[in-house]
Amino acid sequence: MTPYFVTSGVISNPNINPKKKELKMKQMMTVKMVRVFLTACLLIAATSFSVYAAEWKYAMGEGVNDPQGIYATAFKNFIEENSRHTIEIYPVGSLGEEADMLEQTKAGILQFLGQSTGYMGGTIPEMDLFTLPYVMPTDTKQLDYFFKNSKVINELLPPIFNQHGLELLSIFPEGEMAVTTFEPFHSPEDLQGKKMRVMPGSPILVETYKAFGASPVPMTWGDLIGALKTNMVDGQENPTVWIEAYDLDNLTNVLTYTGHGHFNASASANKAFFDGLSDRDQKLVRAAADHAHKIILSEAEKLDAYGIGRIVRTNPDYQIVTLTQEERVPFKEAAKAVQASFASKSASNKKLLDQMMADLQKAEEKAE
Ligand code: 6CS
Image (cartoon, protein in one colour):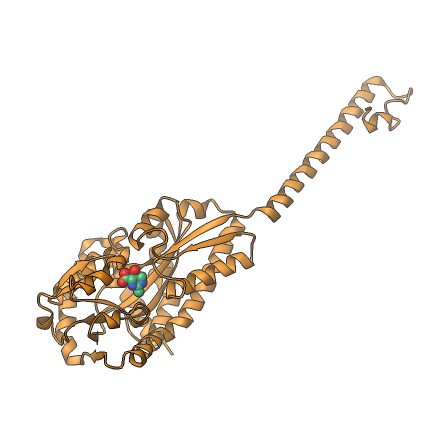
């Protein structure tokens, strides 16, 4: 078929110089080729933008109805309502133990990870900051301000996560740590020789319970129920919303508030995956994390009351003890050595602990 410009009158005009004729033809050909190329680019861009739909994997250390599940579901809904991407959530147990998930995310097998901070200190030493005894407040308003404004979380930890192949998205609270045991305790002497289960990824939790007089036993969540049933351990610590949800109050006899800690969780992405996203998708992921962060912080203010309320209602004979300020003194004294030990492990740990104390001071001043 003869190209249309050949019949447009230029080629067939006898008064035009052949050289000029050839140049004109080439110019017209170039314009045509450029138009075709640009149209093709626009079509590709348009279709890739509208039909690019990825399936991302999000694994977490809890179930969909637990705090990490509330965060993950809010994150998933935001992503799916604002893009063609989909998120598959894998609750704890579906892809193995919580301890396995951090490595799977670092390896890029998972795109997103919800992880309890008590499982991270062995891999990212600075994360043991969140398990230190008698550092985190128990006041929900101070916690809310801290988790929204903390320089530790918003400025110091992101580059540390990057060094470990992760992109930090959020850290949030799940409730005050409560200690459940078979027998009451009011002093470190009462805990002498007691085998206390601690989350398996935290050297600081081991140091803490040694300092409290007990014999710490690092153990994954999957092994804890059986260990309590067979008296392999004498007690454990968790927030009340978890204790109630997983029936730990019916596997022990006493719940004790020591005021020594708070359970926290993180959300992160595989860094290579995140860096490889378009600017648009990176902004989408950050916006989804901010959205989920707001939702879980709002929920977190109610979790402790909800947890202990259900325990008291469903298990009225369960013994609840709150250590007095006087009873807490020896535990707080013992905690000072653990805090010093954490800071002495590296300059980075010390910098983070100093900043954490400044952040918490500000939270105490600013919390309404
Ligand atoms: O004690 C644990 O290991 C579990 N506790 C909570 C509150 N979340 C997940 C974690 O694996």
